[in-house]
Length: 333
Length: 165
Image (cartoon, rainbow over all chains, first blue to last red; front, side, top):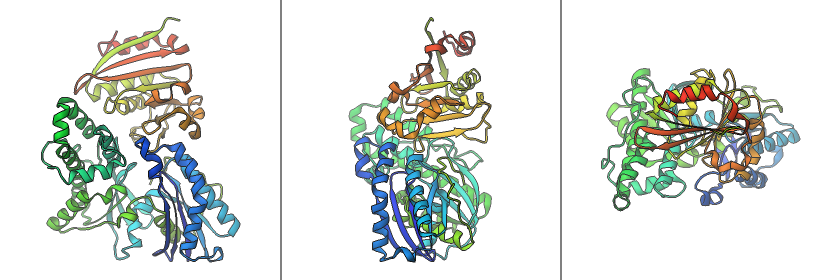
């Protein structure tokens, strides 16, 4: 079964061909990073206008790279939410038009489900149940994944997403965009224990996260010290912030393991590429005898292969979506 | 119409949220609230209070829409929570169909509203949050256009709870 997946929920416009839900035949991505860089963030209007220009070339690239013919395609899956409505509509409309023209089934995919199950493209040995930590610019959520399609939300951020905190703190400190990478790079040279930033919700019994207070704490810290001090200790400030953010995530994962008894953890989303987070969770796995897995960085960030993989699983079950399916910017899982 | 401009001080996020809740109760369908203030000033926190005042169920958690730009919550009146953190100019908001929200059935709360001054409807409440120190915020509520005549006494009594005048 050959499935074309399309993903355009935010910055990236991507298309991928996946065979039988596991073999990625091609993976074309047009990152809008260069376009957004001067503005220090994603500019939605640019995003949707640019998706419109790139969507067909990206799909064609995916088809060419896989040496696939349109008659080989058995179904088309596209992200329908959550995300920016303008961006979502571009990919969703392209998918519907192609499915209609080719007379193959069409499926709208929940972006969050695609992230949580992206690991299976690389590692089909992961077994259920597992705890799925989804950390990105727009989401920070912890799920218990019982099976494909069976997700229980255990906790989520009450204010900012973890990736959003990285971006906002990077902007606050003038580190550039994307903030996550800038913070990670500079942190390598800093002392993560130099300054004690707060670990929000650490003592709370819920599995919810909070990152807004951490962002504000960094802001106060910068205000309360001389610019020369901040400049001299920038790497320490950044490393301490990153450590607090990572700790916040690790503490909740650890609590979730205790409260659910589930000892397998799969991390996904853009922040799952953060090396410090990986190292700390791997430490936790060693000390507590847990099984922690991460997709490779290309499958952590937004990509279309994970969308195609969900499509494949659901098409096999006989599922499909009507052409009336609309984009849902606030779609839940 | 005499201009409406009231200022008060909140001490901590709980009080900011409480002020939001009391303001939220006074809002009507179609109202637009423009929020202005720096990173960490408490815009999302105030919005969480406004949501409570609009009887948005607690299960519909109000969080930062910096990434999604817009979150919609259903309550006594629907709450359209816009966050323009990542938007540069008003031209960039055109694509998002903003008119539906500004002139719709629900209450619209806009974070970083100064980025789209020219798009804001003439009638709106403007709430600015200024960081005084780690816990306290100076919060100013203004009524622009015809809303200046609405709820004057009620607003004055709400802000008086927080030392307002």
